[in-house]
Length: 295
Image 1 (cartoon, rainbow, N blue to C red):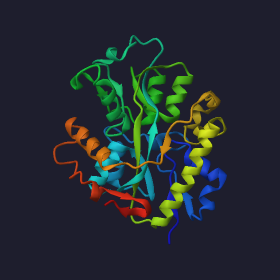
Image 2 (cartoon, helix red, strand yellow):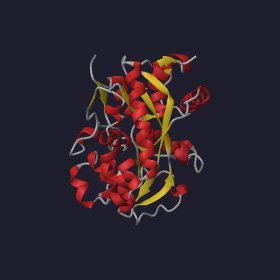
Image 3 (cartoon, rainbow, N blue to C red):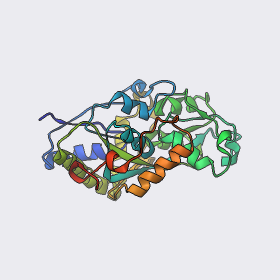
């Protein structure tokens, strides 16, 4: 039986579980694999209109990975894996601008290019937040500025007027005095790829559940782990003692209603071309405890 492959995804839980020995306590035979981040951040820069969905199309090499729930919803509907329905997570996120920006209120972002990841959480969440203030055709999204670290750096350098950020970059720009114009917090979901042993999947999530409790109790002990995934050129500027815990795992079901409502929202907003979303059948797209299909 091959080792269970774990790739941390811009959050603290896997690092805490590793430090505390929770994966080993569960008897999980595993390895860590860096799928996206790298010391210089270049592995996270996938290019124009290549985002989370495209990495599922290409095929992820970890047994369990995660992305925004919208993308996992569609990717699972297209047969690129199975959405794990026994847990989801919630990631703080927001649209940031420089402190001297003329943008003061969400309505000021009308027609302003906002750097987001294509068909990634920031893409959907920006629309979801701003359509309260303006029609969708007035929300100008820029997909040419790379994924998370690249658009963070472009905003720091004054090369883009606004960017949607989450995880470490969210807290880093907040620390540096950049201004959050609107909160865009969004749900994440997990994707099961291939055919891992169902018991290994259960062991993995049991370990993460223990780690989440530790983070809830003493977040300041673990925010240092953001440095594991942020490009090294930023480390000297980072004061992770000031940062928050970021993405929080919620061990509640990702229900049929949530799945169907999300699928419908994506369809209504034209984020995927006609016919590219799959059937949106919950039974076919989702697995539950021990990797069994949902009833």
